[in-house]
Image (cartoon, rainbow, N blue to C red; front, side, top):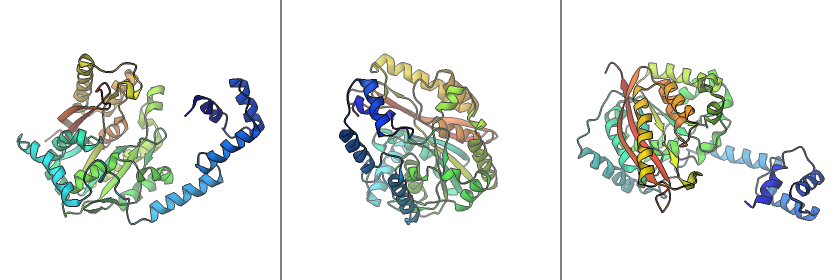
Length: 371
């Protein structure tokens, strides 16, 4: 976006008419703006649905109606970052699991929770496999899988549900309508405010694909949940559980998990560092080593499974490494009672051609402390 246009858009907050917008722009930039030019720009923005007006409202309502009336939420990743053919996709994911199997992992039926990445499979495949291989037995015995994913588009502190089932190349994973009803009963329809974000958000879908691959023909309902940014809680130094929407949702899911065999999955990546993400300098070998040490400290905290300790560790440093998985991990730890974590894998994935920008990921499994 050209910088002068950004200054102009900042004036379009609903409090100014066209004349006032023109005057404000000229005062700020010293550049005259003709009425015709501004009207043409406004028309272009309107056609592109960038203005909060009746046209946008109608388009949004049509989109949400289409989404809710569809047979299921269509898959978006197969055909882009992994095969779309069912047999090819099975072979693709299984090759990662077979590589892990050669390292002699022991599947654990008592797993209660997982941290699984949401980066693309070509970069994160081995770490995905390290955690899902351990969870294979638990997945097949589960009665419900709650999948908490990062909502990369949501406003802060949002918890967003959907009633839509999730489609994969192998068929459809049903959404647990009774659990959705339980949350809505206690929290209200606010949980659907950003429901349309489920349509294109990949974080939950990554976990759904691994889950469905392991389930094969077994039916197990899921609860797909998107989690918005915790930046305001970091800025204010407040616990996210002070937000009613979050605390009420956590309370409902804790009750549900106590009544049926439940696995809670946090589909979460770790650090996002380097110039691609706004840092001034690319990471060299020393920078990568420092990042690994930083991430290891967080992984040690995650092993203790204390949600507030994890949040405070990130808040204390101002989330300097931009951990986009903070919300789903925090919610998972808040839902699971008395668990301990075990790391299964870690990787630093390139986010630029020169390797100077990275996304770090990890895998974790969680078991009851008594196990």
